[in-house]
Length: 79
Image 1: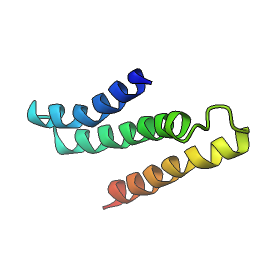
Image 2: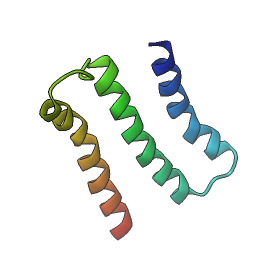
Image 3: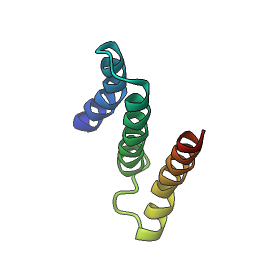
Image 4: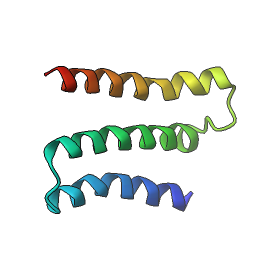
């Protein structure tokens, strides 16, 4: 469980460190999109305890992040 906490903290700190290192805003946006997906998988599997749930339930709970990131990425790409 501690590894999940550390992974979530790293996912949270990475964009801040990248920003302080001078990363471009576009790179930061795509980095955040990718890390949202990683964090969603970790949260659903470990904190919602869906790791051993039926595949349909697990897919539904993890799928929201993919849908949200896809929509936001599409809006970002168009705008």
